[in-house]
Image (cartoon, rainbow, N blue to C red; front, side, top):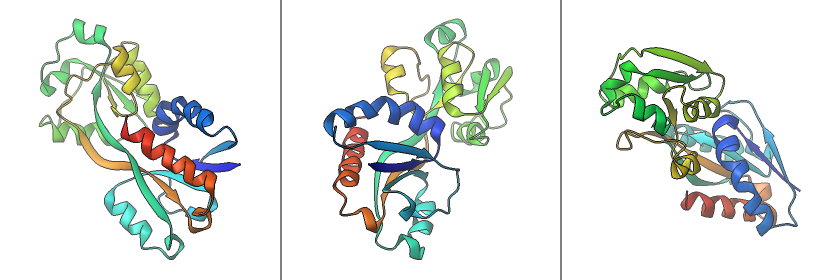
Length: 213
């Protein structure tokens, strides 16, 4: 039995991990995976689970690795947490969106779990202080992305996590050149699990799956 803890349930677990998990189950049918979603706190004990998944900046990761509890823990980056606006193809056909400044004519879809993300992306794209035509707020990022797919407005999405929706045309990214990339998704293997074959297989699978995302 493999216990894996995650945070950012809305983004990583709902949008990427659960859709990908059948492949790991087929690859390692002898391993039973139990996912446990935990509070979004930076300070945590990596030994609490066989594998932990976290979204961290380089500075956050360095601060964690300096803690005594992290001595001997093995860490691997498997997905980038880069975001860019996404919307439905029909929405884009109805309303011009050739440059970031035109977002002022669009409905902005927010996530309470990432309240500053739009402000950071707009600053990156040179459209700071832009006021949208309207706003809808959701509890989680995956709900905002789902609303974007239904034509309710423009959300911020992580291309690696919404790759299937982008490939199918359910979502489109009008500004793929403007990516806000401040964090990455990491797996963390505590010292007590470094000799656990199931935990190692899970981390290797994450690494391989993330490489092709």
